[in-house]
Length: 242
Image (cartoon, rainbow, N blue to C red; front, side, top):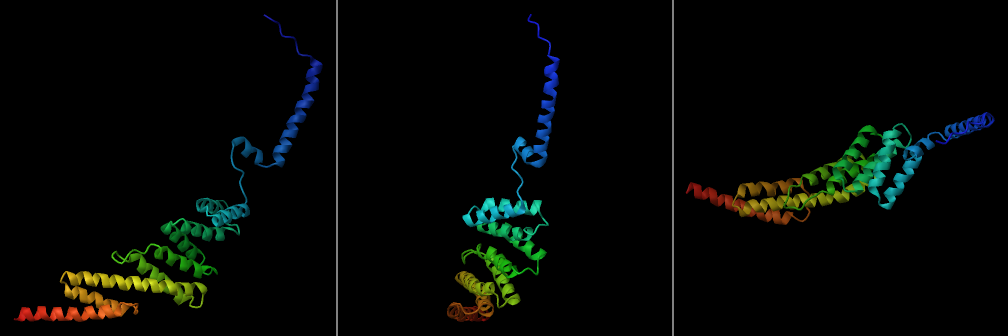
């Protein structure tokens, strides 16, 4: 078996200072670089500042990468809740969810923003977007108009609170569309009852249309049906008496 040569003591003495120097140099670099080396060793992404995250989020939003934008804005909310970018991140995150057609989540985001920042200058826009979350889910006139009613309520609320705001003007245009949908729905249901021979139920729908919705082109048709319903009801009553 080969015999290992003993270590040269002089060589060992020379190597110790060099080793100590290398260790000190390494520690100095580590301390100066903060956590960068740690992230590199662990394979982690370096933590970005709120300004960098906001830049990433807005860039992704403008480029149509909405999910990436949501992630960036969420990081600002989680990591830097007291930074000057946190409030903007809340609003932009709701916008990103809206653009991904996540209507319910976007609505939740806008409502949370309104609740937390009721005096913010963007509140007219926020209320408008709340209405739009419902407006985008409006269904054809042969279906229940729950979303149309809620969109109508939000647009009317915006017009009451901020009548001269730019978004109130937009709300007025969409409100007209809501009225048309709701009036057409009432006419559709009234006609359905009329065809079934349920003239009192049909009459109630036609009268409701005239009372609650402005003239959007359905008045003449509703009035004609009201006249026919009354004739049918009168004949039914006369037949009962006879």
